[in-house]
Amino acid sequence: MAPLFTNNKELKTFVVDEGHGVKGLFELKIETLPELFIQPTERRLDMTKVVHHESIPVIDMSNPKDPEVMKMIWDAAENWGFFQVVNHGVPVKALDDVKDATKRFFSLRAYEKKKYLYKNCPTKNVRLVMSFIPEVDKAYEWKDYLSCFYVSDDEAFAYWPPVCRDQLLKYMKESEPLIKTLLKVLITRLGVSRLDETNEPLLMGSRRMNLNYYPICPNPELTVGVGSHSDVSTLTILLQDETGGLYVRKLNSDNWVHVPPIKGSLTINIGDALQIMSNGRYKSIEHHVVANAHENRISVPLFVNPRPSDVIGPLPQVIARGETALYKHVLYSDYVKHFYKKSHNGKDTIDFARV
Ligand code: OGA
Ligand code: NI
Image (cartoon, rainbow, N blue to C red; front, side):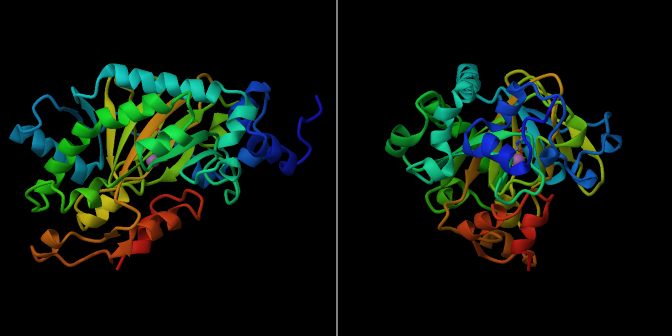
């Protein structure tokens, strides 16, 4: 069979500009991975580095004030940077509705999805993207995503896609108690006694929600779903479906562990902003999603962030204890801009703030 696309330009036009997405390529039933998606070996996950006898902590959040639970959260944030929570209080219906909403959005026809491409969208706060940064990525990632930055309910009603808007907003609201509980526990250890109006905006003053769609891939071993990266958030609350494929780096090692889907659970990870604010006590860990030959996968990370206008740096309470600052103070929007300027490349984003 003659190739469907004679060059990368035609392929990018189909995938990106026409709004078909990577999902559209899958729907063409292509039998081999186009060269554009072939990642250099060092960017793929080396399966020989995956350890099977270890896993990230699973924490029951029924009694978050229990000192043992608090200790589990601290230990997880310091030693893994990643953990799963069960009995977290976010209604299962809200989780199921967000997953359905994600599927609905990606089932839209290309001409409807195309309206949400950055260049076509009347707001900068909603954008449909293929790969990670299609203008910059040399090798594409096997993924489409819709990114929604929350400004206000009114803005969301005006611009977020109607097929998923209400479910995303509901989930965002219903996950707020969990976010506050986790932040309260985490800052206690840093010598900050309360989450209040003085620190809440810095820790959780803005939100971004991404809807990730990883279509079935003809040659998963040659590409990635998401390349290795750490998140720029304070905390990320990740909802994943039952497919699996998320791997996290084990602290200070060359090994990776799988994050097995647990029904009803949420995966929590520390982001760069909290690593910086905690002066390195809490770890923003590299993670990576593999492509899958048999199943489409969806996931929905909710990034809990400082406000773009905030200056982030090691918290004064941490420095007051006598620690030497490992990070500079940087404007959060500059930090985020730096992240979105380059393809995923492990943990190098944080160098931007290193002393
Ligand atoms: C991300 C991410 C993980 C996943 O979008 O930042 O790491 O499981 N996603 O999709
Ligand atoms: Ni991530």
